Length: 452
Ligand code: GLU
Image (cartoon, rainbow, N blue to C red; front, side, top):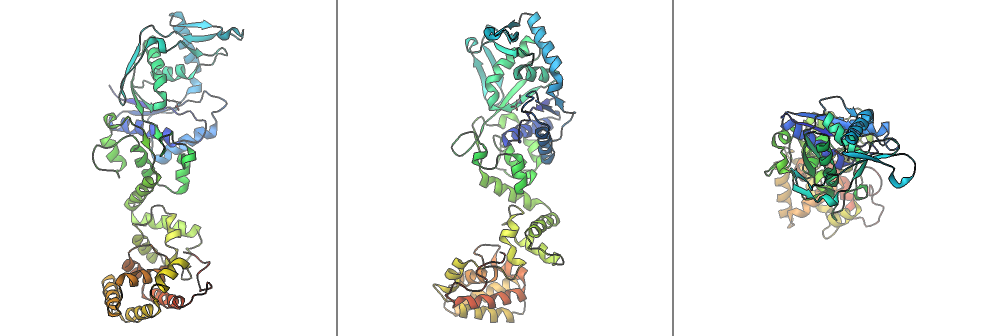
């Protein structure tokens, strides 16, 4: 049997990560089995389905690389088939007409639930069963002639030859009705796999109140599609080994429904951020340089004519720290702007107390001006020797020189940073910072304004 699966979103708003996660799982399943991945737009809710929302689905899928194998099916165009199926069920006694509530508005068509219990095997949740008395007859065509979700969903899946229905947990209850409909329509019941709910830290369904929830939010914040894809694939699935950062090909190779977990999957934004950094680092340097440059430009830090080779060295030095391109302007502005601001708290802590670093920075300035080679090893050796000679802990000199050249307390490795900045900049900055040490007034130069 060749696999045919589909993503069947109702385009009524922005694309929630829970919805696109279903698309990702279907896509991975289809690619793993060499089957077909289809798209059905469930746009029968005329008031809520909008062309913009449809476009939103298509854009999100294109961005994440969720390629389809056939033209999308618009459910609204299938209405005649839905109604015909309902009439066929009426003819065969599996459905009946009723003036629901006796309103005189016309007759609805109701599906007659069979007398037997309904059972199906869910590939994630196991064998599921519902007693006959717990599933009542239900409307399949409203009195205004419009088919109901259950009917359209099942008739379309039959029509599209869907072999596996992989969708969110919220549809489990519907599936008991759907299974009965398949049987009544004389169709093969597909396999079902219901994906675990995506929840927040409190175990409640994850919504936009919990943070970014729509694909577009993540895209706007600068997340990479491969990182969001990877992260969402792990919400409910694991490759069965220790790997967490995977390429699409690796996920395709490893994807099976057996490794989809039934328990709810918790969103962890910090982990997604980490994963984005991992994927970012896997992109070629040239591409990262372009991404970082765009962010620096957008923030007025990069100006035309600046040194591109220097930028590439900065990007490389920042590789471990940059998780989003937008981190660049926040964390690396000082590389490009000599007039960066010093964090006043750090000036106090690292340059003034408990030790006054004025003389120390002066000594570093002299030593580093005289170094035959401005290399990481030479800088480290000289800093340590100098600290020891002055009876100080080298850590004090390490912290002080970091603050002196960057204004910040965190950043790339100190010696890498110094080499990238280059001797001239470093010496100038040590000289400037030296003037901050003794001063206790708040108006120290550079303590307000500027970038960095
Ligand atoms: N339109 C439904 C949804 O978005 C379809 C569910 C399905 O069968 O995949 O939840």
